[in-house]
Length: 243
Image (cartoon, rainbow, N blue to C red; front, side, top):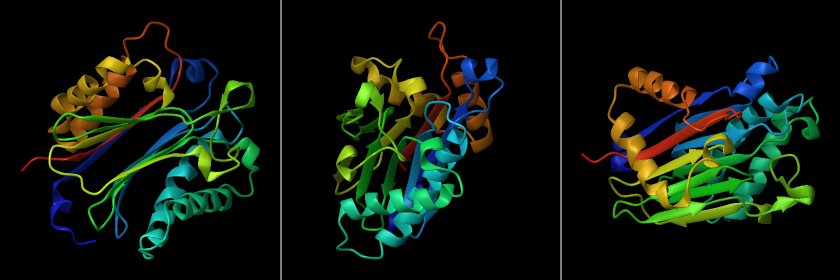
């Protein structure tokens, strides 16, 4: 990957265990990770669903599956978005073996700037993906549909790539940002304050040194202000930092 603005992309995030899993002596079942390789620069967020026995690993393998799939997909410029999503499902199912996919179900949200400068955002399951463009305009991805019984979809239960929400824009100019979050955060955000929330994260944490930023953002999520909140909380940001 050689596009000139690569050095100006910031990726950061954190994940904290929620009170419910602490009370049950379980580990954090969310995951997040960065992408910075020949496929582009980006972020991935995942929520292992339903406290399944392999939920934590399912979320971690969602990140790995996106990373693996993008590396293959960008090598074929004419490949469709649907093919990328199919690759993610295939890699994820391979990655979780020998566990059963029913025990490893996980949401999957990602945002990546690929070598031609295009931004790709996608979401399977609950949580939220917010693009704030440099003019302040917002594009919000959210869960496309739910499975039977009002349960969220995800890797391991989705029957089709049509269950994904998918969005692209041809470029990602300076001072644009994408924020991804699992439902432990997304469910507490009000629709009319989403832009303000993204700006708050950038203003308060974006310019900090990496270790200080991680510590400060982790503290922010541990001290989440919503009364009686229970869920694990994960947030990641892809930001084209102004020069």
